[in-house]
Image (cartoon, rainbow, N blue to C red):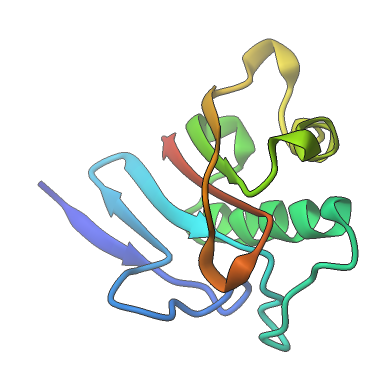
Length: 127
């Protein structure tokens, strides 16, 4: 198996023993992203829409570093602190995918997320 670590300064630095993403053969496994601004290291949490947008932009940067786009994404895992925010999160999330070819997805409410954020998204993409 060919394995390589994907890293970009356009997404937040990992804050633990994990990589932004790992490419295994033709499959990219992207770690969960939260709404950290990669330039400043601060959380973008003015609104759930702004927070979700930053999460998706961070994932976009990781995909780009791997030579991919959201078209390559086959699965996403979305973790939310409050399921009542679903509609707002989904509206932003949906802007990044063509509905006809959208990836498989799980969206679950969790008790807590890193830095007490409201949303975290991880993904799997294939070339």
